[in-house]
Amino acid sequence: MAVTLGVLLGLAVKIAGLRIVLGSSIIIWLIVFTVTRIVSIASVMSGISLPIFMLLFKQSHTLIFLSILLCLLVILRHKSNLKRVLQGKERPLF
Image 1 (tube, rainbow, N blue to C red):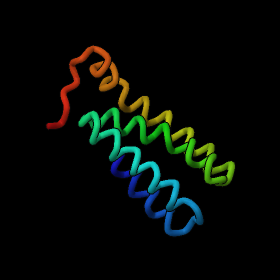
Image 2 (cartoon, rainbow, N blue to C red):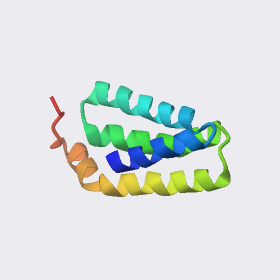
Image 3 (cartoon, rainbow, N blue to C red):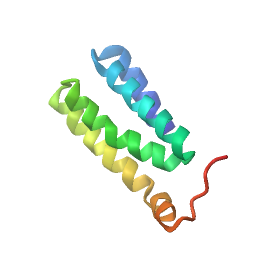
Image 4 (cartoon, rainbow, N blue to C red):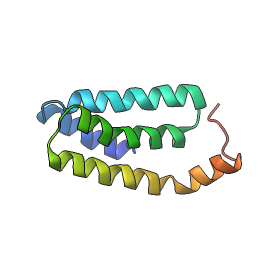
């Protein structure tokens, strides 16, 4: 997720409107992490919010499509963590 965030930050400098989309997704991550203290839940929720914010802030079809792919990648990457969350075995960070 950190590498993805770095790439998105780099793109945000060049693409109009992407800063607000990225900022909104980061705020979602912070809110979810503050409430749950579980990084994987915060990452998945932030990933899910990305294509939603892309649509809301009227980004290009290409960016919307790529954000959907990124969302799916985030969910697949955190699949084992989400299973542990559902089983009650995923511990909060602190």
